[in-house]
Amino acid sequence: MHIKQLSNLLDSKIAELDARVTLREKNLSECDQEEEKLKLQKELTELAVLRDKLVKSKDLALEAHTLERLSNKKLNQRKAFIGLGLCVIGGLTALVLIFIAAKEFFAA
Image (tube, rainbow, N blue to C red; front, top):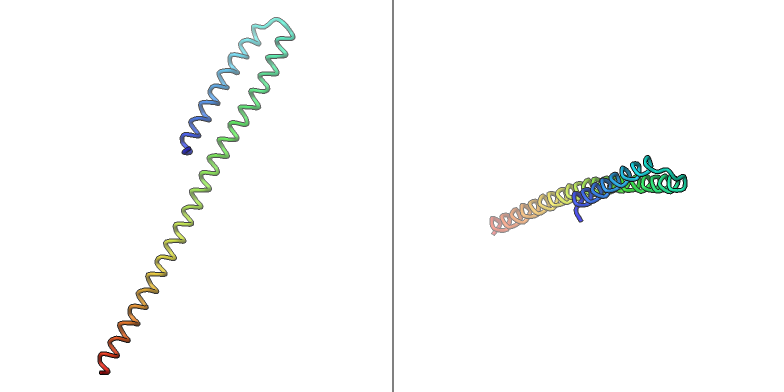
């Protein structure tokens, strides 16, 4: 799953939770029974905890994605540097071989 899809999914779940919280708060304000009020308050607390966990999950996912991207960038830079080094070594080797061949050709 791509980070944008994950972020959108978490955003939709957070929006669903917010809607549930709004509905429960409305029910709480309309409720007359103490027992029902306590039940709704407990549910609101649980929903708030769940929302906090979803927000933290989203933040962690974004941070992990950023770190992965930076890590890949460093890896690609390292590969490019190694590739350049190998090209230089290959070029120097070719020059040495041409020099040796020219020396043998003119020595004969």
